[in-house]
Image 1: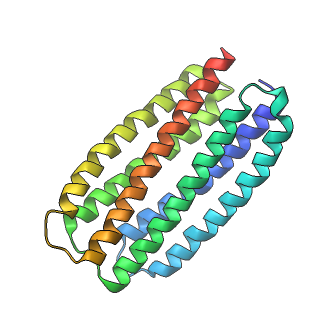
Image 2 (image 1 turned 45 degrees about the vertical axis):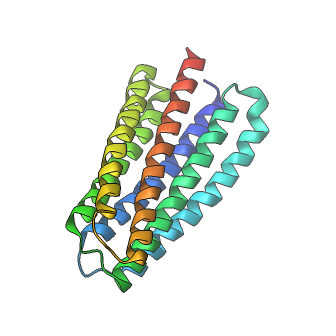
Length: 209
């Protein structure tokens, strides 16, 4: 493994740590009572800005060293996936803030399914962080962590299907359906993006074998 690759993977780990911070704040927003939702959103959105800035700086670096590494395009794709995840999490927080401020999400089953999806995303992000950390140390364990992410994505798909059924089960207000459905859609999209990151990690590990 080259020095540029080590540097790239270290910086990707930093971005993943930021995303884990977003997810923990989001979990807090969904599970705790008597919190300032817009304040939590502001913190999550601030981290999103940090992720976007880090993505562009690292992207510029990858473009400069791309000719010297085989996996440059895979790293660039991973950065795009991470940015989209971060943006999705910010959007989820905002929509949930609006929902709680104006309507209140009091449907316990829907709330529980969304919380379960966030918990799965925390697990996916943690596995992604570990997979990148292990890429240069133990490729077999790195692959194992990446495959964990793919399994988690399948579990999120199951939760999402149940969530969709519950959203349309009763005659909720249209604004409730629109906001709640968008929250679920974005969380499910995050799981898909983590799966794409896992696949790219697998490709990187195969190239190095």
